Length: 290
Image (cartoon, rainbow, N blue to C red; front, top):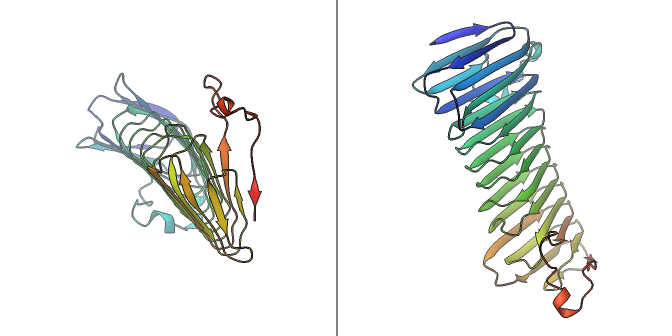
């Protein structure tokens, strides 16, 4: 099937191998799932407005509007073109390279082991159990990443980033006014760099942690739950530095006017609290704010 036009709800199966997937929709929802069995499948359960064009060529499956290119996607502001909507679900081999673009639509990408890239003008994105490198760029859409074990890159103007059980090698995030909440698993990233102009940054680290830490804010507050870290500066600019554990990882967080909070993650239910051995109360969390 070299090309087809989808103007009504339909289901398509692709017998030819799929190694790369491109999806671009306006409004509605796109759900991409990686599977280890069967051929790639597409289900369009709802569609309004112009048809979606579906093409398959040289291992690349594309589901998109013909007037919505990937290049320059984040600048696509043709409001007449917003009068459309589609609900699209795709199942593709887990090793597929995935590119998803959404304008005013929600996106969910899960179970993909190949590289994944998401661009969003508006609309929230959820990334679940991705093990390849991940890149997410948004204008105002928020991104939630759950159990992502690949390198994570995030850039946004006003969108928020939430990382749950982060365990990839690195997290790099840059926003203007969006907030960032990063929850690190005990075997989590060893290279973290977060930058924001006015957005708040909160990082929850395992205890014991293992990282060289440096956090800077020009006019925001710093909250610190680790005794081995020190805050410098009483007025205006604040800087938090120090080493946790052997210092084998790196954590950098920078804001201009946003606040920074470094929090201690409680141990898992199946792990003893490392402070119990010294007689400390397992439920106590020291907190210093400047």
